[in-house]
Length: 214
Image (cartoon, rainbow, N blue to C red; front, side, top):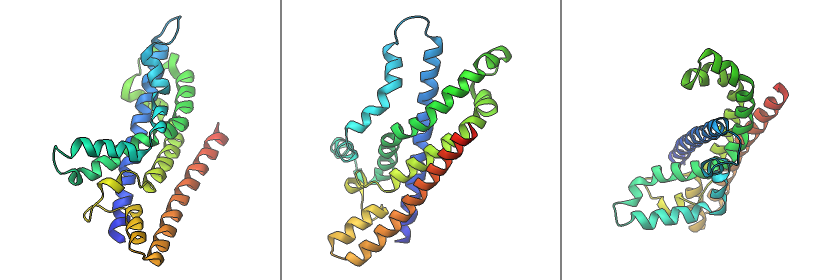
């Protein structure tokens, strides 16, 4: 159980970190395209950055994992790349929720600071850390907590790629239920539920603080 807990925490942390980074990059790209666009309709690329992440909600994680499993089974040992698949798929599946936390804050910060940064020549990494970071800190933390909770409780991908060497709490819970060890399964479900609840409460609290500060 201890090893499964550590594995779940590590994979969920990496998945949430990747999801937040991708969401921030997509938000920045969308904003840059909107600023560079003159009069006229949105381009196809701008539409893709605006609504593309929402399409992942149409396909369940188990279907995405099954597709990658079938594609990679002839290439090599699919169970050896289980951590990579779990982190990647869960990060992408959490992006629509992370974007809802990050995008409004970034757009508001960009609206306030765009002209000043252009006059002072502040761009790129310097602008992100010196100008935008104070406004994005809480939204990014909210997105991170929510994405980590989603990844921590997900069973879709690990159900296909899990093995004796790579086990998470949901995978171990499924194994205990399959062997009719209901008391162990109930304890694991309680532990998993408490951790996910703590992350959701943290995300909700950070979101309320963000609104209050605004």
